[in-house]
Length: 303
Image (cartoon, rainbow, N blue to C red; front, side):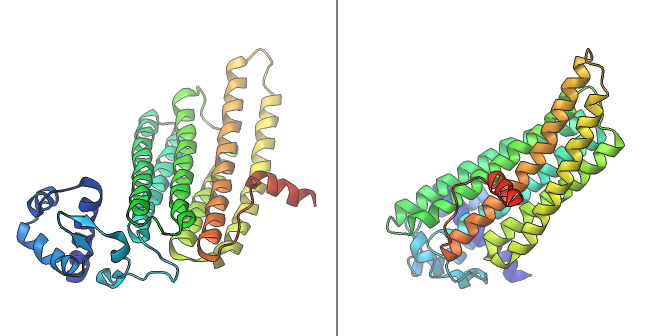
């Protein structure tokens, strides 16, 4: 437990150095609420090895030589700067899943307050995306001869997570703007789709963060499940819409918005496949297709 606490503090110190540009150890100590003496103690080995340079710049390339400092397992193809950026992406993925959960709860409970809370979480998602972009720029600036395409993969993953956050906002906005609650039959379809979509996000990020490309079969099976349920859900919406009087425009608008929620859950699944494809390129140099996942799926269904 003691080592875990020490490692977490050292990570926090380096995070401050990377993103807040402190001039002194006193500044670092003040921002983290610890003593300057403790900051000095933790930084000394890194300064001695040239990983951290005065006045507090992290040499990301040198840091890559010292993963054992944190007792972390580093995959075989890690490169300069990846450790920190992956940590941010891990946090971002967890945050986006919480945002999704809150958005869907607002839909289930028809709760406008929950929906507004979920929408506020999207600001943090956007900030995390910018932090990854800034980190990638830093990694490239400090090591311009790094594998550029691999470095840019982090930006793409952050962008994918931000898109999932945007789709989460569509679900939350439904709870705020629509006049009708979702009926029980339709809600069952949405619950099943939501559960699978979140599982796909977690599986895809596990593949990317931990080099688990063997998860492809699991991910593709989940994709088949969510698209099977999606067809049933859209048929349910179409049936209910057909029973609505033509002059009831408010109810018709509601069904259009409901269809959009169904499509949103499908898009989250598609983005998860794109994240996995990026993992394949990152670790195994497997080229990604330029054809969007939804069109690839259509081609598979037609063949």
